[in-house]
Amino acid sequence: MATAKRASSSTRPPRASQFVQIVEARQGFKIGCIEEIAWRRGYIDDAQLLKLAEPIAKSGYGEYLKALIQ
Image (tube, rainbow, N blue to C red; front, top):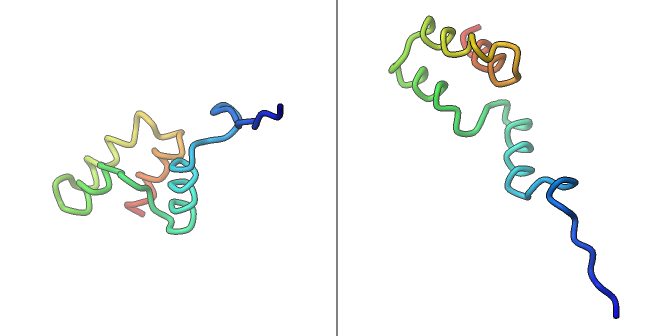
């Protein structure tokens, strides 16, 4: 009796995760970036956006937030 092998979640990310990664890479923006939405709609200014990015400045997400202003 043959059994089908399933990829474990530790070796293969879920399809939704892959989709998000692909879209973000191709489009050049983050999906669901609440800080960016608030900034683009004028709820926060440049200084507030930078303040939000500061604690995570060394991560890709923090770098993305800082790059929005430049």
